[in-house]
Image (cartoon, rainbow over all chains, first blue to last red; front, side, top):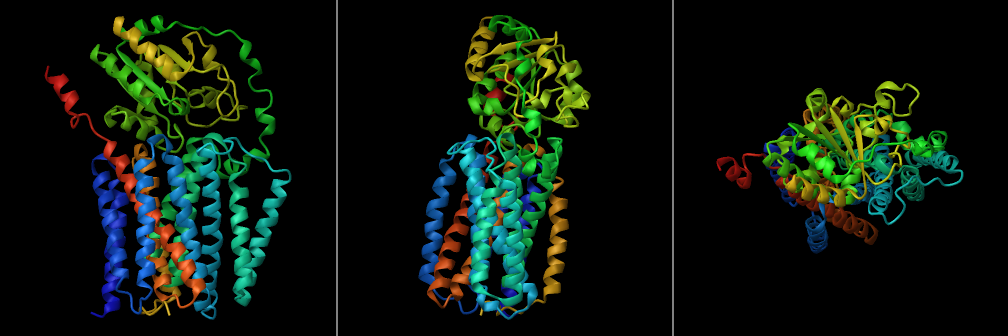
Length: 458
Length: 110
């Protein structure tokens, strides 16, 4: 076999490792093992690349890899689990930038290599840089360096369309003429467009953006692979691009909205949010911590519905404490996880796993919904829209059609909420006024701590 | 300069691309929604393999501009790849079943 064939074979093994890594995630039992295989594949790919013909600049290569490791590893080790979404966004952004830089750096080499390569170069440059700045804004929003709400630039829609038009023109120019200044201009337009794309998105929708940008970076990597004619980059990038696209689709389905509505909805949804919160002077039943503690302690089956508010209050450990206490009293406790609970899809599961909740207790929506009819008490912590029956019943509601947790089927529903303010979607929840419902106002962590104390003495 | 490997045609690359799309869809549709965050983070680490591309660029760079772009790309790609795998491992390490937790076992035995 030639050296080239050995390298190709190494890349093939690495590609299989990546597929196995993703496959391992079908169960928590095999997931960690799969991740090791994926990392092994990545190391193999890097080692094999060292045998590429005519490689030079070794001090620069080794220095850069060492520096990147010195930045990446401590960051990945130090990040708290609540900040995982912004960490993923940050890693995703630098990957996108790397893919774009690779395409740009190699452009001259291929300037007369035909339109297919030129197309791959412009694709990787535009999409990679969009992903980079988009991820930066996502990071800023999630880290709360800037507002988490949608930001509407005056005339933002026209700026975005203008940028898009410029993008298309520049793509044509670069492919047609091979002009380097045009490629540089394309990079700049891509960078600005990434900012404009993410600015109008906010709150819980950021989860979808992370997934979408992940897909973008994957596709940019695949395009860079096409530029370099490197099959491993094509396979790995495409795997991520396809999986990210599918995940984005699943997530937006779980929110009952289209991707277009999430990315561009802020331009049109003003009418919906106006007037929200006005109806909250209707009477609700407020309970005391002691009443609820007795209700919980003498139940047979309790389901906890954790939401965004639980993550914000960092109350996942306290919730676990309460669940353990109830279990020791013979109560059956499980957690009902809505697909979009937390700050990114699946984030709530990670937070609860960190609080040592065994994953068997974490129930997905389809699994838990039939169980609510047999449930004595549902404790909703910092969630609202995902349990709003309007999604099922009220065809005029903006969240109509969104799959929800059917907590209204249970005997009692206890809401731990900061205030009567509606959830992110800005719509009233009829369930709050229902006769099975009791409200416990206050900080989630505070209330839960008090509940733990009260259940102990109940 | 950078395409010394036996040069595959664009049609062949397209074939690999299309097949990978289907593999990607297939593999992801089996992922438990409980693990969607580690999935995104793991997928993130996998696209960090752009490091391979960055190394090839840097290894073939023969002018200052290419070297600069190559160095930047290599640093960023390394952060992406190494950081991605480490943070995914940290997450997956926490997903434990009931049976594996010794504290719970003791309680059951009592």
